[in-house]
Image (cartoon, rainbow, N blue to C red):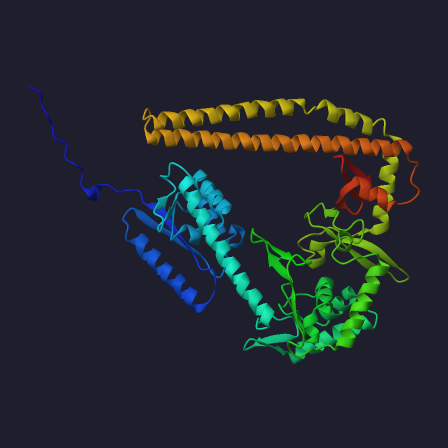
Amino acid sequence: MKKVTEIKEATSSKIKLKKIRVAAYCRVSTDSDAQLESLEAQKNYYENYIASRDDWEFAGLYYDEGITGTKKDKRPELMRLVSDCKAGKVEFIITKSISRFSRNTTDCLEMVRKLLDLHVPIYFEKENINTGSMESELFLSILSGMAESESVSISENIKWSIRKRFENGTYKCGYTPYGYDLKGGRMVINPEQATVVKEIFAALLSGKGTQEIANDLNRRGIPTKRNRRWRATTIRGMLSNEKYIGDCLFQKTYSDSQFVRHRNHGEQTQYIVRDHHEPIISRKDFEAAQTLIRQRASEKSMIKGTNKYQNRYAFSGKIICGECGNTFKRRIHSCTDHKYIAWCCSTHIEDKNKCRMLFVKDEALKNAFATMINKLIFSRHQVLKPYLEALKNTSTDDYLRRIQQIQTLLAQNAEKRETLTRLMTQGIIDPVIFNQETNNLLSQADSYRDEIKNLKNTVSGDVTNITETAAVIQFTEKSAMLTDYDEDIFEKFVKRIIVNSRNEVCFELKCGLKLRERM
């Protein structure tokens, strides 16, 4: 006879279950008192909820106040939560609903996938979705799409309401420029700041430049409205602000369908309200300032809003610091007997301890460029032609063949998914197996598409480099040696300049070549 021995179940006191580190995320879209009360209620709820579970350990509460849900990169606490998940501090996330987590379908799915790669599921209470046990993203896609549609609908309703207030002149400014304060929804003059505004306009009309005005204000220790340093761009913005003559121009900016804000250059209707508030500057002085600004721009062939206005010098935005990676700014340096143009690292200008890169003279850069071009002209057969042959030898044929192979694999992947669907509808395979296999195939298809995209970018880059190199060779074969800097040649062939030191720079050409030059 068989002997049966009973093994009694272990008592719970002897087994210590591993607790899951659980964090909660909540968000309110405005910083009004009512919404902040809602946030406080959410915080209390989740703290109690997580503490009530024996298998959960409270890992923290992450919340964003007064921040939009349409873009993840504008929510610092959400980004901190993801960082803590990467560090292993959080193993499970709970949140009220998809709309609280994100109203942007792309961001929502991207965030869910990123967290699942870290083995951190999310539980959406309202929709009762646990991403850790989901067999498909379809349901989440639909619901997050609905949340995004809701956000778009709300946005359109708000825009309509604001436009109506623009039209009937009842819109109240939410932010006032330097020189004004907001009291009871009305713009009132700040006497101390208004004096500075008058000084700025007077200084411009007396012949001073915007950088000179900014330097003077900084030297006197006068802060901006946000207690920052004055910049030439800040001064230019003030000089063209119609609010200083008592008018208000509404809808200077607008948001597109992806919730990205743009400056309005006529894409949307604008509304101007005359004599909206008390002016600081007379209309006569304001118009005189605008005339002077236009005159100066015309003398430099600068048209506001154009690319040349943003990059008024050939070197603008193209000189990169080899130490900190920031761009260089154009400055005027003074000696005892003369002035000269120099380019300085933006970081070094703000804080010398953060970047110790010294300035380089404009003239030295131009001479270095002319020398570099002359070397290319002289040694085109030894440098450029072998480089072009090397680009052609690393032929794109291999890349194109690989793209064709992947496209074949993609087609096979689609056939497998169709077969799985057919087998499930016929009842041959279980739905759970169908979901698992389908998700694996979808993930594989995404990997194939990503590889194709990368390969196409590589092919495109190679073709561009070949074309640009051929253009440089054609130029060097026909051009005589340069006797001076030529701005047109620089803009045609140079992508950027990397400053390694005051004595050495590296010219990165559009064809991909990087050439060092001593100064």
